[in-house]
Image (cartoon, rainbow, N blue to C red; front, side, top):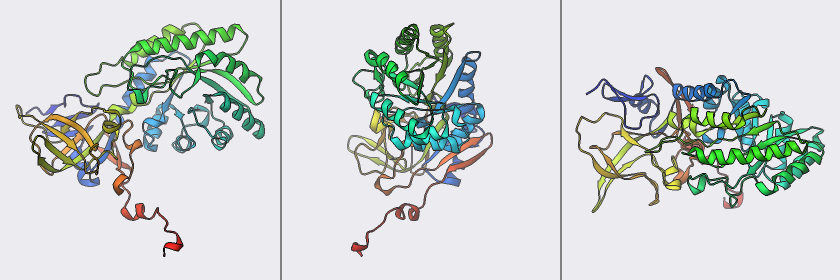
Length: 430
């Protein structure tokens, strides 16, 4: 057995050493013993490395990188990225408050999302955030009202729906005309003209985001070109279009995908905007954190059915909903390294939730597995803990951040008393 080896699709910083899976220099079994399972574990080094690749690829341009907080909103992750120089892309007042609490300056925050309320817009303007991405004419009118009432000016970009197929899962495609996001390309110029006439507003640019987990540059290029053409036309009319917010969506490898490199993605943006004088902003989320995280689980039972073998472990669909919601693939490996040549037999990896959809993998070839074994569910740093729930009155999964040879709990597991204490029984029920 090798002293150091990698699982087939290991996230950065996750390797076998002396037969045990480690994240950076911390054995995952040690985390499980101290914190219990299931538990999310994130590698500081992997997040740092991904961010620095983005920053280096875009170096020298008038560029801002705003981390898309919806991918993983733990304040420790946000703080780590803030210390590296990242801003934030938020889609709710709650995310805005998280970004501020984690140390991201207000003037490095962009507020996106199609359903911003009056209160949310008011809070954002009071904080002095960098930009509000407006996604409809009614929102434009409301923002003007709020800005006037506060005696402030709102810097905004119009989010354009370019009607480009992102070629990704239908539930995470956001740039086609039938999607709810953004202002249709045909109406975007008129909306920009309208914004320029409304009091309290300063339209400064255009924004686009066509989806998540894109594995081809062609949709990006089509969307960017349409945005640039629109911006050029508006400039010819005499409007100031200073900024292009090119969004995020760059995919990662979960199974056999071959997404573009960060460098190729940055080169495309640079080539299309070269010498046009735009300030550029990007909003990576998944690309920064997905492959920095794993979900650590412990096998409860191995059940042999009539036609299938079930590995029942303590991570469920409420902890990681991506396989149930998106039919997503996550590599699953044992924490104890299998012996060379160990046989692999198909098994369904399922959780304890009372739903047939509570599964993490179907017919997955896995080495011999027994009750008590630890499993690592890979590439779970994005849209994992942030989408978790307490369904079946299960306790939310704790989160751990690893740094070199140490780790810290960055979201503790609540107690049953904490959970039950959230309910209130009305007095007439006695």
